[in-house]
Image (cartoon, rainbow, N blue to C red; front, side, top):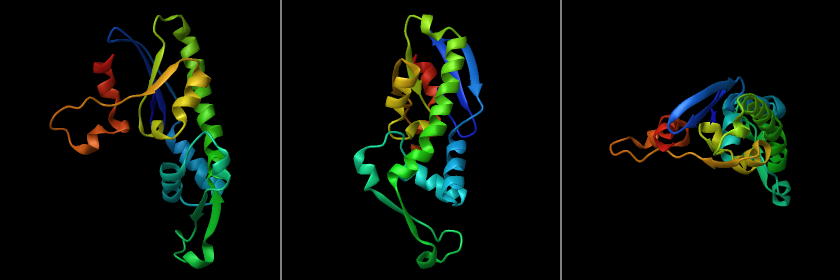
Length: 174
């Protein structure tokens, strides 16, 4: 499952051969849009919040973890500054991630995924890095889930070794 910006792609492989491919028209940029609308901040601020403070599983400590935002649009930090709790941010992120996973589950069910011999799910793409996503996906998709990592190919730049570049590496991994 490739959790990209504008969409979520899913591919089923058996013995290095792709036997099914589909996509859900929701992705990480939809999560960013929800944060921007919910907190009334610009998209770049919302993306930063998602990447640095986001998550999908709240704990008791998240109510006490405060995040300062504001002043990005106007430049007046003192006047526009405010704080939100990490739990509030998770409360915005989780519903959209659940929607993405529910749509993905429907596509996997339609493909007969539950009848395949090995049911391991590999998450890739930028949005796969949201903390807690692996655990939530495992619960919602009813399968073993792990994060994909690209192969360590000598000579690749550092930028090509992150989660967003993993789809090509997965083909060699399966």
